[in-house]
Length: 76
Image 1 (tube, helix red, strand yellow):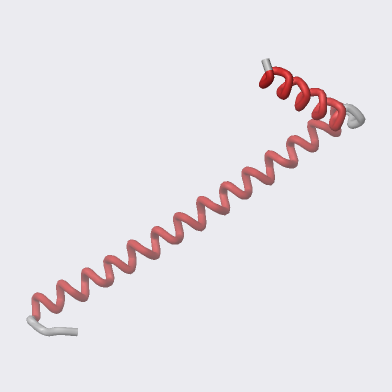
Image 2: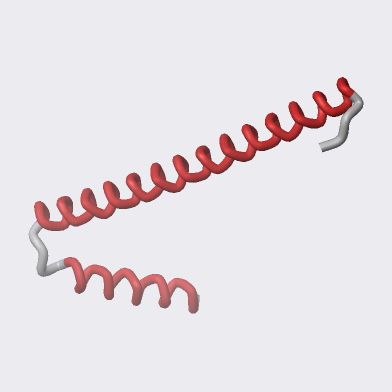
């Protein structure tokens, strides 16, 4: 019952906050926030992808050097 009342209070509070805006303003606001969230997610994805690609290239480079050292019997 307590959580229901908390949820009701939050709902009423949000309703009061957004009530003064017209429907179009509310939709535009939600659309803008969704676009910002999408851009943020895309940026995070691209940064993670780039970091993984750099790591894979570094592992390949290290593995290639070790392989050549083993093959030729020399040390670095």
